[in-house]
Length: 487
View: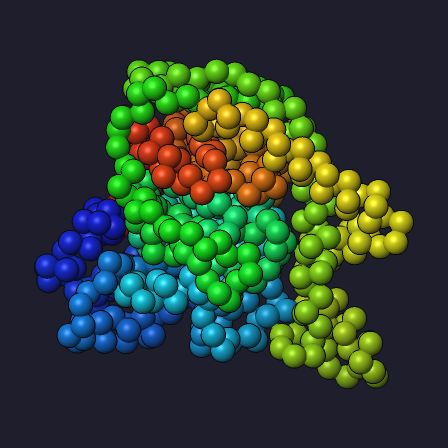
């Protein structure tokens, strides 16, 4: 019996009727993890003993079964989990075995009786796009183990694609939910900034970070977002607004809907297979009654430069707390506090993290703040204005999620591809918009491709509607990677 055979809603119905119990779904997930994770390596920590005990308590409880009762999920390792090791895939936190509290989003999942199967791999401190910078091991793409799963939420996407969990939680600072979802052929939603509490999400760049769900279907994604969205007094950036029932927006009808396609999204660096898959998706929307037009968002060309400055500057500030004094890596046999701090950070952080901290610290230094950081914030405003102008005339903006399919582990994409990768994903974070990636085809080699749908602020309902209509008109989401076992 495999989790692949069910959607979350189908599994919930079986659990609520008593045809399955929480202990059985937990064992289904654990069996699949044992079966395939030696190949995929999506998990850093499997919460086996705790989750079986939790499932047994749920089954014995006489309280009403909540909406995610017995549903197995994975949590990115930069989300705080009380009593369960949280490392951010860094050696600096390899001994951070018992955090004292849960992130708010995890409290919401626990309240809805979901099962936390464990912590999934990521790029160290979410700095990367391949999951190769994890201090413990890389994660491998379930569709082809020679390829990356993307990042930084590579473990989150791979765990769902491999059928190890029904959903996972990732975080997205510049595309880190959407890009791995595209590479792994799953659904990844980066919600509007402020929709989900960031309390307990270890900060990379606080003005850009946003957690979100990764699932195998659009309906499952909407189902999970309904649980984790909402105001939190513990997060000053959390927005106090009514959360709609996103699953109510799932309908196949998009007749009359207006789609904008930025020409900047299909520029140099986008492969022909990706371009063709996007054009085929637009033809499908035409058949469904929607219309589309090419537009220009001219300031997207500067998104990668602005993002690099802002993200690294904020990361330098965010990671200053990791000093070897309070928790985490602490160097031995140092002569004074300054040497201890330097040595702890030097030994604990990987090369990519050190590089970004140095760059970010420079951007915040005298002589650079005005010429770089403030200028980057001004460009950010111009990008936000471009989106707002487009949304005066169009309901959603559509384009590829990534310029190519997943590349091979150890392979360095061209500068054009790397630039286009940023053009496609980071503007959404700079503007604080919601965006989803849905499968829109496969390469001749069998690797997934993703379609990105961007919406107005707090208009996740329309984004889901547009994604669902396309998903239901195609079969891309029904394919499964061939990993052996019970697919």
